[in-house]
Length: 205
Image (cartoon, rainbow, N blue to C red; front, side):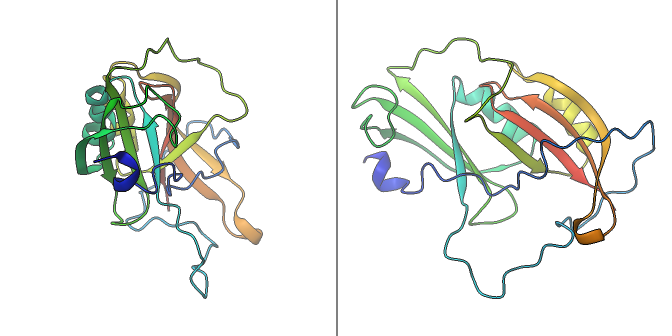
């Protein structure tokens, strides 16, 4: 069994929205309101007709899959729906040696089709990796995840080996769309164990 037959959408980008990740407005020490039980992007409606493409998944090549699961499954709360070992070609996904063995794990959030994270570790032979850079530039990615109890989950993420925080949980306010009310978000930022920047946030009422 080869990975290309099993995961045709291997390199799809995650559907979790990258929500204004570059815009930060400090808001003193204001107390955060209650989180919405049904978070959504204010002012954004579903298309009248279905669009041709779904943004299904981002798959991250990782150093240590078990450490990554400590973050994405145990702290963030995603659910594993697939866990297998595959043989890779090294061509379509240009990583590792041809014929190498890799472990692939897929995790979903609240949707059974979109918004997934994939984790993939080359195990035989492994892919050598140095420490990840702590600054970002063109081509780098920010994955934005909306959660409950963001302050508790941000605190728990600190215990995962390899996680590096860039910003503690804090309240941020963004201008509303089309003159609408301000968008209020509580969130933290950190690099995951492989250097992917995560914005873990909670959209507030």
